[in-house]
Image (cartoon, rainbow, N blue to C red):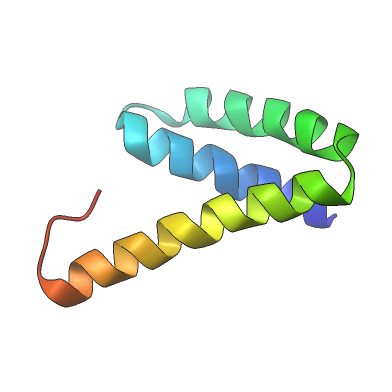
Length: 69
């Protein structure tokens, strides 16, 4: 279940970067789940780290008054 959550968050972050519809992000998120699951615990750590870094950068940018990417 945790892998699906991380995959969905990775897909959402990729879709935000792209800026278009949600279908591309959903497809990439589904592929990310498979790839992260095959990598085992390391994949979950990498995926979670990616999402955490994006959230941290977004929070820091809004706090500093910079653009939100």
